[in-house]
Image 1 (cartoon, each protein chain N blue to C red):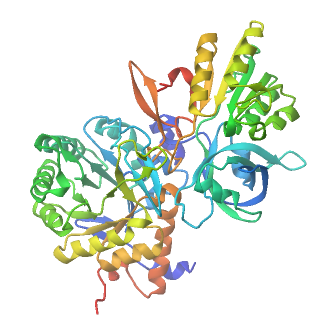
Image 2: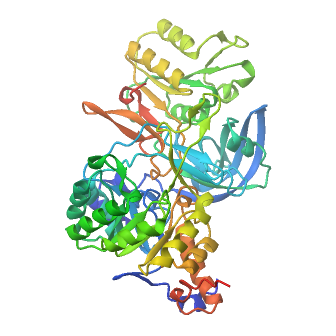
Image 3: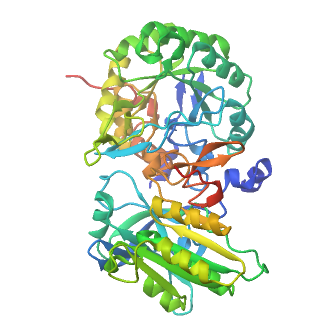
Length: 289
Length: 311
């Protein structure tokens, strides 16, 4: 059946690369990172085994239908058993409203309905392409998809460096994840409580100034103004940048058409869905306004 | 599940001349063009798929934010973004047909001519079961009056589309009117073969910090479980004045809501907003409906339709 359909149409128009699962998943563990940041570890080997860095899930938050909609969450880490098989995955959550506050109240053994894996993923370098430096730039909970990306890049033998920004030192995310992976980390905080006092783009720019020539690829995820600033840095340095967006969305499947952003399209522009054509976009295609 | 007794229950319903294998459809704007759900739902099992509203040309849609969550519901103001009728016929309809889906094309326009243009183009197409007319649109040629709020405009646009296409025509009524039964009669007078009841309810919310409307376009359409009692009442009101087939729409999130729609006189239902947060619900409802009918001793679901007991 599927083969027939694929013959009739471009593959990406009808089927995502991997099937989407709608699963009832048991919460294994909830780890608090700060007063309003936490990690949820879920079962869900199917999603864990098939997802790629940058993809996300839509999860219920509890509450039995109120709030109504599931919440989009980037896949953070893959959980593995002692022989390395994927057994589940985790999401990194910051409380920003009622839905995320309810997620924080969940307890091990609770069941969440989770749809995934969804969306595209970060584009990995072509196998055999010349060695490049991969610079991951993140702000706040935008750090969530990057440890997984770093893992894949390191596995392919690439060099990776992380630039992490947050409002205050206690809100910096993923520093230990990168340190455990052996990835050099530079941090900035808005109030100067750790690392550079200022924006994450400042430490990125400093690094690019001092860096020797050679190919590099930038990746960014975080608040819109931060990603826009990284886009300006990337354009100035003439380096490619992949940006991962979040947007309010109802379905995550491409049906509700809520999560659109403006992308260049020929001489004009068109709305594209963050959940379907994204969440990762080539920053040169994004219309920043 | 007691599949032996269920398999003998007939779920087929007739919407005018169109026989549907069961009364569970999915509503326009909540199921894309079907392909979005192909991993999750066997599209060929559904009573029908009403696709995202089609216009003559590509429509870019409204600025985001386009949705806002409300208590047991959501507001949307998508702005009727769609690929346009040509791209639908070339790219979206063929895979739906391959999946064996019963496809209903929801259409809209900003003038009667635009409606007719879409209907003519679709009327020639193979593989469409019916047209559903979205009349909750402003008529830009006549002062921006919403077609669906005016009985005369409703009758005229219905008659014009009916004449332009040989397909069965369903008219989707707006609830944002004083007497929905008047609009139902207007659509019937225009030649509608069935009525879809209801479209979304107008609503808005405000962000108190910025004091701005939550939606970029200020207001939008309310859907979800919150609107179910309103929708059920309106199906009841429409059923009082017409014997046309009715497709009940609004806030279906479980079998009980389906049964209530059927009891007050809907011949079939469309699952809407629930497709967003429970994408496999429509398929599960088909099984649950068969099981319920079997346990209730019904040989056919049609025995339930319009059986409201009023003391």
